[in-house]
Image (tube, rainbow over the protein chains, first blue to last red):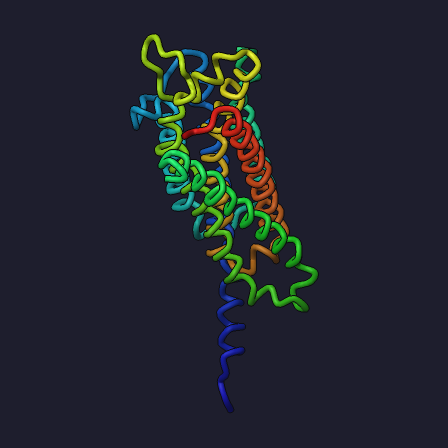
Length: 117
Length: 177
């Protein structure tokens, strides 16, 4: 009896399909946190509460805001990934929170919203 | 030389990297649409999951490069402050658009948006790429993962298309030469 490539591929695929989904939702939620962080730093800057220092002088404060948001994203991803990578998580509430964070973060980057502050 | 260095970088940023990201986003969304769970057996989504991981990784890479080149290469000459007494503002695009009330919105709204949205798109696309790489066919099989992946890619596509359009407007009114 031959053990062919298709059998091996099916076994490998089954192993992938059976993997807990925690790491996936950690990545999604972290992206939502990073998006919210971007909007958060923008609002802080517009309100005069905190201006992220320029990471690269010629680019001004925008480089600082972007860098801070990316750092927030990476830290949250590492933390969430470590906590959830071997778990199966229920996606319902996490997906809602993720989408709300993304919506708020994107909204906060729109200049017309700043006029309301 | 036919094009200045600044003009070349603007084209690399907008057309090469941003345009490439848009194309890849469109392809990824189309792939997600085609490889719905109900069609898995007939369309061989298991075999397509590897290429899908590559496609989404390429998308994320293009978005990061677009954001980095935009922020650190193209944005500085755009926002350079003209010396006191300068009358010809053409070499200073931000000052040029702000000097005219009819074009001031291009910076006050357009560029202010462009400073932040591409980075958001890069983070979202990276999340989708990670899931496509780690979970392969599960991205197509699991309805929750597929829905979230699709939503994030749609947000990326709309955001990148929007910022690209603003970039076209800006470059039309105040080209970086």
